[in-house]
Image 1: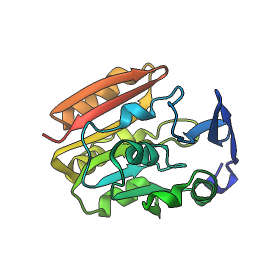
Image 2: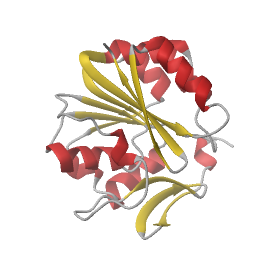
Image 3: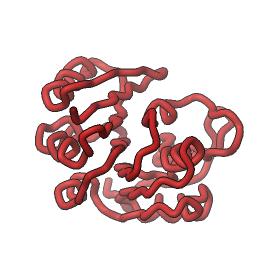
Image 4: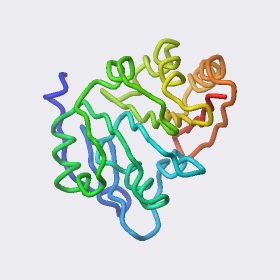
Length: 193
């Protein structure tokens, strides 16, 4: 199924307004109250980044949480699906953030991007799975290259039989990797130094 054949719509997930692709929650609407279940808040950095890159912008959940916690942060959000970008802008307030939303393939984008970024979120999901290239050495080296010396990359993936090998791949590239879990997700918080 090509990207244009995916079904994208607004629905609900455990009481939260959600952006769904083929029935899978990609983003939730961020309001002023407490966040419902989900891994997104675990993706956030501990300190305000001077510059952020979000790969897999979706409806902007991470960008909204960044703004809620730190105020406006100069952010580039990369999303490859134009229908997701449209819904993110119309229903999730993506335009209110002042983020620069780029329609591009994340893997192609990181190869030409200019850092440094203090924070990089890797929240990629396609065709019902985490793209295997997320854990490939070339991509991970590019993410590390884009980070400032004190920067952090937060990488989201599912808990499954591949989790241990994925964490080992991250540890082979990044000198410090801290792992946090949330239900069926793992967030690896990877440091450049």
